[in-house]
Image (cartoon, rainbow, N blue to C red; front, side):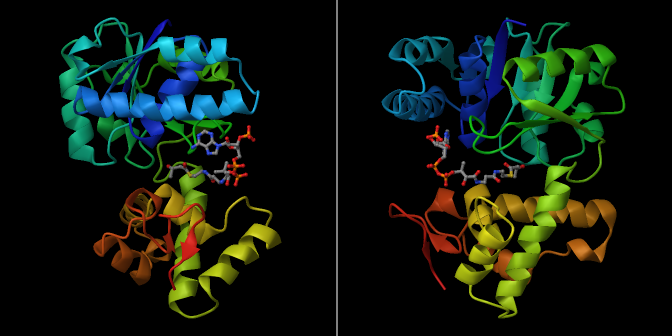
Length: 289
Ligand code: 3HC
């Protein structure tokens, strides 16, 4: 593999583009339009500049990584890609439309992967040009920091597709775990009930949000408390995933916390909107309740 296409230049897509370019791949990064893709690269440049300041990478490394990323306004230019990773909005109809679009130009030996956090891979594969060359490649946020990739095979994913994507993941320096195509895969199956439960506990007045977060941070040695982490991931994303767990398993233990639903309805989706359970507009998140 030499050329990686990344669809979606948001937090996840930009992170995937960054680590792919840093590992030596040429990257084509697209979004709904070129200015959005360029915005993703501006974010990558900022992160790399910080790494230079901290003397983690040289200026030459930074320049080489940035030079390997080319932005495009649509996937029409993805013809030369060996692997295309879709990291667009977590909405099935959007992903299906993207697969139809990129399918028009994808080589017949190229692999299409989705960074979906919860949509079943076998179902998504139906919208891909070839289900045997389709796979789930789930990265974690922030992509440059988190050491894991979850690989999810659909029913029709071939051994060759899996092997090629495993080799790609290892070249990025990530550990790989394999999950079956079950709701939430591994990490979100475990994480989202914890986040949901923390929000239930908050709604029921078990403790303040600061104490729930500090309890888990210090009592469990987690880098962030679950309510901060929910804001960091995006409350809408958390709700979407918990709903997939609920509908996919039919198990009432996954019912979404009413307070989580309320916050999403209010548009308080967390860090990305400036407000969730915390106010993120300043240098440090400030509790809002
Ligand atoms: N991009 C690149 N690097 C970043 C970054 C970003 N967005 N944010 C932080 N970093 C780097 C910093 O530069 C710093 O690097 P250094 O150690 O080389 O100096 C390092 O990460 C630590 O950052 P900070 O000192 O600023 O802050 P913290 O020590 O508080 O760490 C954190 C920040 C890495 C985000 C840490 O709090 C953490 O690990 N939080 C948990 C994150 C997590 O659980 N992610 C998974 C979410 S679930 C998911 O993604 C799945 C999805 O489907 C929902």
